Length: 323
Ligand SMILES: NC(=O)c1ccc[n+]([C@@H]2O[C@H](COP(=O)([O-])OP(=O)(O)OC[C@H]3O[C@@H](n4cnc5c(N)ncnc54)[C@H](OP(=O)(O)O)[C@@H]3O)[C@@H](O)[C@H]2O)c1
Image (cartoon, rainbow, N blue to C red; front, side):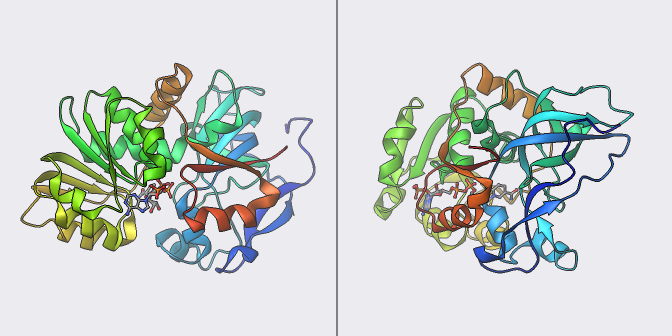
């Protein structure tokens, strides 16, 4: 039975054609019945990830795969409370506070006041609050990039390029917590923020000569991709392993270190409930700080996408359902 507070319609932001921010339109949606293994969450906040505006623009795999299934609701991060559970769900009950990485990569759906998730996509949190929406996609990418794909170990040197962004800021902390030596590449404006995280060597990417003076790098974690990444990698003297995260340029960024690095790979983040649980616990025990640049309302989504695309913020935009 639906929970009694579920409204007959609710707000969601969808787009029906690929294009600019004006394609994002607030619509009224009716709730659909839950399957036995599904959970309905009353969403308090989601966050904008670069894949959102790339998909809206019609770029990348998620856009191609959804081209004949529009309209689409974007968004993969959710924080909120359980509104209703399917008949086979025993782990969660109505009223629980949860966080989730939902519908990745093709379904998405979190730019919406209510979302439907699978049991494996949600993790209980002690307390829900808006900033947590900056964690799921970015945190899982940082963790998997460093430790699964990058095989980072204590005592190794990791260079993180794009260190002040949504993924990078979390990656710097996860690497420090794991006992790695961290070199963070970011604009000068973000250096103080990164140095406040611990013993971090900062490099200003506008000073290209700095890349020729780098020590030997065990793992290069690239979050910028494309020509800027290749320029940095080409200038570096010695690196052992490369993980490059932006999917669209992964092949030619990997090719740029042929003969220099012994391993290079792209990656696609995947859902992992245990890893998300560990990330949540790290936030809860203050060993992982979130990097929220701005809070905006879901109704301000067009302006929020414009801002996210401009590249002028260092950190994530959280979209809240209420003021
Ligand atoms: N494949 C996957 O599964 C996956 C998953 C997550 C993200 N991604 C991709 O990974 C990328 C990073 O994601 P994100 O959420 O962290 O993005 P983000 O929040 O926009 O962060 C990128 C950061 O890079 C910095 N930057 C810009 N030019 C730079 C340069 N030349 N050198 C070093 N840093 C530079 C910017 O900050 P400053 O200029 O202020 O320093 C910015 O904060 C995006 O392309 C995203 O689509 C892929």
